[in-house]
Image 1 (cartoon, rainbow, N blue to C red):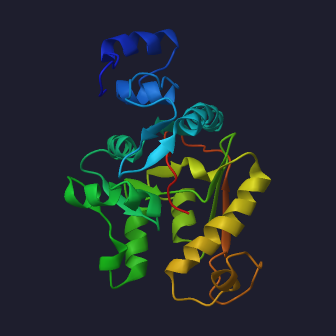
Image 2: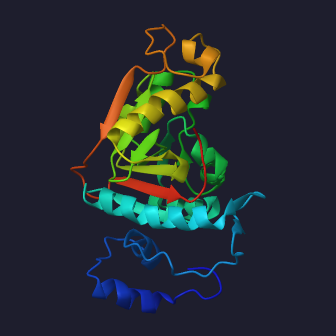
Length: 266
């Protein structure tokens, strides 16, 4: 672990053992974050605000609230046989994600602005990984089939409830299908701006915030692109074709959510 005032790994190992947290093949740092021991590093901050990378300043009170809320979400994920990890910023999220993916892994990705924003995509392309870049494929079906067989799939969520339910909307279903089945491991990069108190508010966020923002990137004709709000449309260009609610995972260790104390993506 990094930073002045960091606990040594041996001390954390004792704490984790006392709490009954098994290794599950994870490093001490990741096990600590999964167990909610997020005070293991001391950060420089003022009483009211703190730096959060790329020149952004975040209100200290909101940062602290998010840090506490992240632990609630992590417990919710764990109750659903999924794993959650807390990152104080994008740099730390990138490190956690790379450790979860593992060197030498093949990695596919759906549209994931959050991963791009924290520099994770560049790290995968430049590092010892096989990144399946859909943009380089002439045959998009071949790209999808390669992604289904990948060691890891990188994505984000359109919304995530406080008790660990993940909500996603998709147009072509390449993203939601890979979340549901296929790649051996799924790694979500989720900014705290995507947390919602319950499933109803999560669905509303996905439809009224995420989807209208996402369509601004594309040359398509939908009501939400013109107005910024959902019309529950049946436009041929609609991006709201499939809704995936992930409320439990039968496969331990497959679904991994990295919660980032930043506003990321849509």
